[in-house]
Image (cartoon, rainbow, N blue to C red; front, side, top):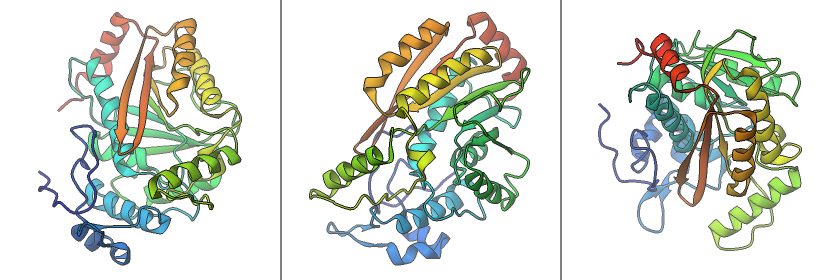
Length: 325
């Protein structure tokens, strides 16, 4: 059982109750886990230990410490410029989607490597497979359109014995597709997850970053430095989040019996109506929207299935009943 986290750092409200990061960061302990973090830890104006969350190098050092401390890693690193996501938010997605599976499984979260998850856009950081495997024992198929990102993620897996054999990487050679070219016709998945590129262009991404930093710092910021990094395909795509997710929904219908639950993060609430309309049009039997809040940022998961109640019960009996603890 994890020991209580000391009250140092920043509170992170509204996280899932199973999230390991619901308290304040124990920065005294974390800087021992990753010595590179030491130079970034200092007392803030309130007298609490904290780091500069606007510094991408500091954020990367913190993430490394969190992943080693809480998720059993021996090694974690990403190339400069690649997305370095906030760990509490990524963990929240994993826990909430685990609850979606549990709701179709008599309330028990399916666990073990026989539970297979497709991570669409794994990136160089490999964070979803790390958290999902450590927490629930799931195995992963990890896809991306960037060969460099996949190579970096592979290096993380190969450098951590606990992950070896648990993550299979597949390069998506046709960026206009999501599942096509990745999944075999008879392949079965228990869930899919995705953190889609939110913006339509690089300029839009940079403008959004400037607004975010200006609001947080309460002064005008002119340089759009991303404290969490990110390459082009990780942050923007033609048509933005709306087109990307609609494309995902459309393609998911072609694999309607291959997967129990599809899901994606949705940043813009204004896009939800379009997603619901499309899901109903293509025959999804159920869709759920799960709100998530991390500090000042609000987001949500949209999850959907094409299986009816009887088919979900059969799926649960065949794949999940012997996998819960």
